[in-house]
Image (tube, rainbow, N blue to C red; front, top):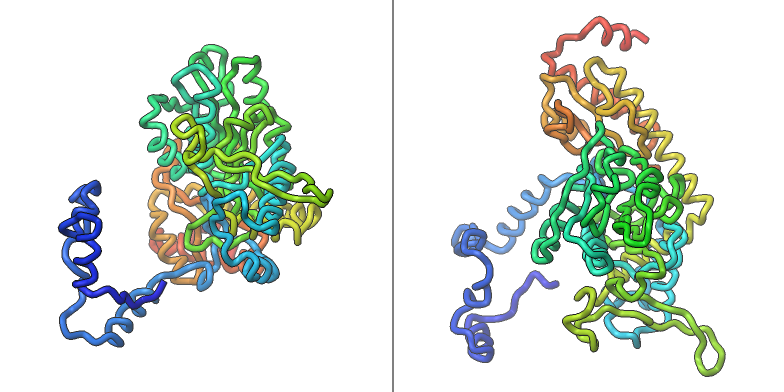
Length: 468
C-alpha cells in the first residue's frame, strides 16, 4: 500500500454521492462513538513531510522485537528457526498471489501446496483429514465448538481453565449468539483436573476443550480425558495443540480427540508481530461435511494425469447459504505454504530434532532459574514441553523484571499477574533457535534483575552460587 493517498476532497465527495451517503462518518455508524478516533492526526500545522516522517521514525524506533532482542516470549507465537529457503520458495512468482485464492479454478501449484499442507497436518495430528487452514488458531477453535454444537445435542461446552486467553476471548465472542454456555473445568495446579469430566458433567455438553501443552506450558493428561469420553453420544473431544510439539508428544488421534486445532506458525514461519497466522483444523472423517473452510483433493484428469481440485467448501455463496456450517470461505494459503515448505525441508528427523532441542534447552533453563533464591516453578509437579511458568519472589514485580531484561537485550517472557494459585510470575518459552550462550546470558541477566528488584541485597545462597 502506498503512503501517498491521491484522492482529493472533491474525489471523496463524488464517491459519497455515488453510493448515496452524505458524509464519511455515516460509513462508520455501526462502530460505537466511544471507540472512534476524533479529529485528524495529532500533527502540528506547517510541519514538512520530511519532519513528519522523521518523527514517525523516532516513534517506531521505540519498538523492540525478536529482530533486536533475544526472544524468550511465547504464549502461542514462537521465535522458531525458519530456513532461508522457506522465504525464497514462498516468494516465487507462482505463489505471489496466493494469499486468499477463492475459486476452485486456482492453479494446480497452489492446489498442490494446499493438499500437501493438509497431508502434513493429518499426519502430525493422526486424524483422518484436515482443511486448507483457517484464519488463526482461535478462530479454528471456535469453529470446532460450533461444529460440535451441530453434531451433538446440548447447550454446554466444558473448557479447560488454562486455555490461551486470546483464544478464550474469541470463543466467548463467537459463541455468544449461539446460546452455548461455557463451563470451566476445575484446575489442579497449572493443569486441568480431568477427573472432573464425569458422566454427570458430560450431560448436556456438546464438547470438551483441552489445550496441549496448555497456556502455562504444562502437559495435560489427554489420554485420561479421552478415556472419560466414551459412547456414541459423548461430547466431542477438541484438542488445541502446539503443532511443533507433535514431533515428541502423542498426537490427538492417538488419545481419542475428534478434532484438533492450533496455530501453524510454530511449524515454521515468522511471528510477524503476532500475526497473521494460519489456523489448523483436523478431524475424524465422519465430520467431513460439517467442517468449515475448504479441502483440496487429488484425483486424475481425463488424460489420467494427477490433478488437484477443491472438493469441499463451506461457503455462504454456495447453495447451502444460511445452512452452511461456516461463512469462512478461504484460507491462509501463503502462510500454510510457508509451514509446508519448512516442514518438508526439515523432514521427520529434523522436526523431531528441533522439538528435542527445544525441550532440552527449556528444561535446562528452568533448572538454572530455580537456583536463584526465591524463584521456583509455578507447578513443580507439571511436566512441560518447551514453555514453563515460574513464580517470582513476593517483592519482585514481573513487569519490572521484563523492563530490566529488555534493557539487557531480552524479551524475557510474558507477565503472569496473578498466577493461578497465587503469586506472580513469568511464562518463558525456549525454542530450538535459542543458543546455549543466549541461555547463559539470560540467566545472568535474570539473576541481576531479581537481585536489583530485591534491593541489591545478596543472600548467602547467592554469594555461594556466584563463587561456584
